[in-house]
Image (cartoon, rainbow, N blue to C red; front, side, top):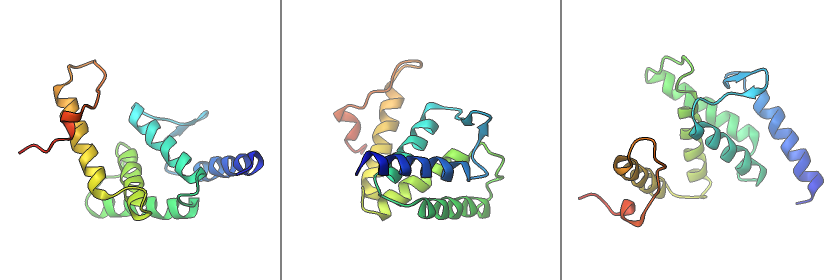
Length: 135
């Protein structure tokens, strides 16, 4: 991919993200309450730039996820927006074959185990033991 194409793609991504009316933002752009929200956002933009999905696919999938959550009782007050963003990202990359739902669950469980053993305020580090199934 040429620099010009990547530059145009990045510009298209910025315009597409700006066109999502529900994204939490201030005058400077998207606002994140936690580092993981910014990371999920960045992963989404990067995967789009790499051609894993189009912005039309992303917008449709995010919209469907939010509607599903609302139908299940989410009050849609903004606090859960990036939870929907992450769920959309996980579903889309599994549908596209980037990873499997099983691997997503495996890493989520490993992260939970690592977080449980990590003292508050310390960085969470995944170790091989975190990937062993709890029996």
